[in-house]
Image (cartoon, rainbow, N blue to C red; front, top):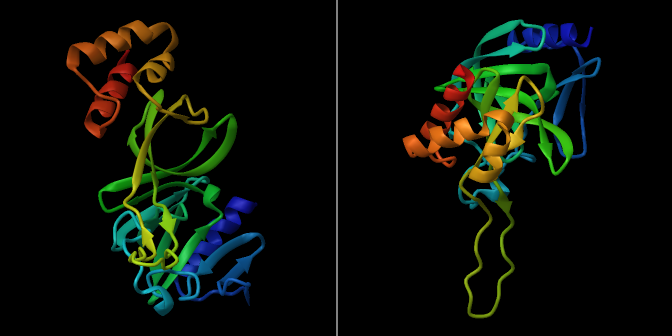
Length: 235
């Protein structure tokens, strides 16, 4: 029932005829609600790009600065096309644009896959120091082993002025990129280094180690990692 409501609500949102209860929370976000599904309209009070109070912020929370045409596939398998999508790597949120307004897709777990520009994103569970969380990942390779990228942008407040030192302005740092591997749909695991990465492959560790060595592949760049996981999936 929850998934059905998600699809119905998104369709309503995209035709610009929201029939829902509307309220403003403490952060100034306008929430359109239908049951427990929310599409939050972003206002200048909660968005760094449009807030005149923080125009001097350096950098951007977005993986790419502009919206791109794309589509969302829900967990139910419904495809919603003709969307203008963008990924906020600071908040780990998908945003879409409609009639000059910006919305956050919420809850995240209702999204199975989002495709826009040259990228595909999936919502996945992943392991963080022994605890399972969920979030959006860039998708590189699918199969019995799925190769994912977690993008993270950190925000830093403006520094307090000090004598004889120019304070650094508020800023978003460039995206940090981390590789994760999910085996047969299990929560994804972080690739920390080559040694720990090879341990993921169990009985096929030696085969994979030989493949990496022979082909001089790294666990720190996209093309090498795609070749490694494609090789494993073909075994």
